[in-house]
Amino acid sequence: MVRAKLRKKYSGPSHLWQMERIKEEAQLKHEYGYKNKKELWKMTSILRNFRGQARKLIPLTSNQAAIERKQLLNRLISLGLVKEDARLENVLGLTIKDIMDRRLQTIVLKKRLANTVKQARQFITHGHINVGENKVTSPSMLVKFSDENLVSFSGSSAMVNEAHAERVAGREKRERRDKKEVLEEKMRKAREDEKKKKEEEVLGISKAEIEEIEKLEVA
Image 1: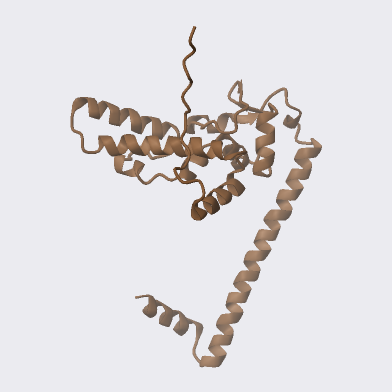
Image 2: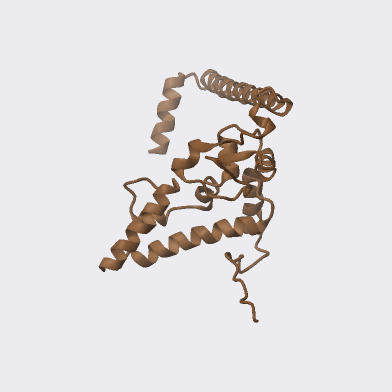
């Protein structure tokens, strides 16, 4: 018996060593925490497929095209990738980040069930995360918009307990990070105000006049 050869569900880049693409992939890995490039390439293939379908359907006017157009938009709406009043032209504007934002790993972090993308991945792969009643162990699963509120810790997971050492440590770390961000923003504004004050002293004009000059320069 001859077994059928399974086709890959993704395709990698045609040129592996493009520096700009390598830098972009490194940034995406830092932001979204995927394990290897195959995970990214699968998401890229999904994006390419959505955009390809939209590009093919835009010029068509047949009844079948209308049905396929509705099916595509409904699927994208259900995934939270486009709004309910979206058109096919909006699909062409989707980016890889739009797709990555719908991965379960990202949603777990967004809902603050985890404190880092790495921890979110660990919770999922170790069986701590449910989507509704179902335990999901795939970080790359695309979460439907309607299911986003159903993402939670599994009832059998030790992480359900908010007093768990991992969650307590995570909350403290997150609070320190949030406090740091607030202080950094205050420092940035203070530096800007100090700079404006020095400009006023040197130029002998008010802050309002400086802002008016900047607006005229932009115009």
